[in-house]
Image: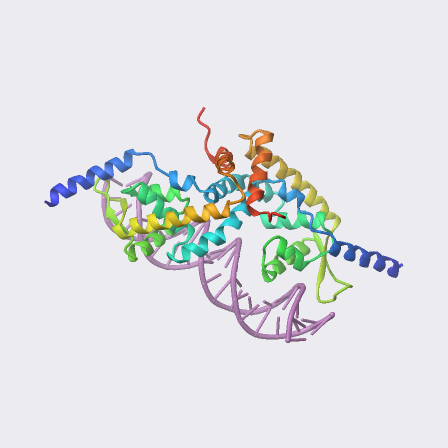
Length: 163
Length: 163
DNA sequence: TATTGTTATACTCTATAACTATA
DNA sequence: TATAGTTATAGAGTATAACAATA
């Protein structure tokens, strides 16, 4: 009967509403947990980086250029996994803000080399300090040893094993 | 002199080109490593999920509805961290494909409850099996114990500590 | 002919405002 | 009045094709 069926449905809906959400399958997947942890940290990151008007990629670029002055856009593009067209406009913005300089590569005039300006270096250092504080806060549930091990395990996934 | 300065620049560029990229700072950040590991796994995921015509979110939705039949869109929306407008069109697509059913909630006619169809359940099960295989492959550099510990450490970051 | 970087453009994702129907 | 869901739309992020300059 339709009423019988409907009664069953009402019960099922009521039970679903009372039950806590079962996420066991997703929570057993490494990728899903990586994403969740990342999404948990990033709001703190964004909040702090707003003060510098930097997005995550912008921060990555500043860090890489600070540690690797005079590399080409090509190498930077590969490092930040950003396509050359999209990197170009990111660099336009940072250059307009006086944070970096594009110079024609004297060894191969097709390419351009990148260096931070003194302002860029200062911002890279300041932002890195802030990010380090955020990291500590965001991973406060972990001991130093756990944090180190977490990073080691994550790197096993994406770092090529030299053997 | 300009030539002297230029010579220095040429040397700096040459040296930068010879040097391997220094990414130490970024690699010391948990969030960065989470993202890198995630990005390393996802291409495998996408490749396999193309066979089912499912994106990551679609897979999450199928998993959650399989484990939690008859929950409302509201609860699902929160679980997958997707805004109601965006979830609506995702559900439209899955419903059109005959994978799920939207039913008016008899206990509160403003809301709708969601259930997978038999086809939806089958696809959820098949896709979950595939994803489990991908996970094994993508994390093959880790022992079972390491994999379990990695997940535990990640969850410490985003799971609320009940204390 | 191949490569670096740019411009233009399209596509996907995500976010927000305004509406409807129920409560 | 407030809430669940939808529609419409705008914005950010990402991807691709075509071009200029150089190798």
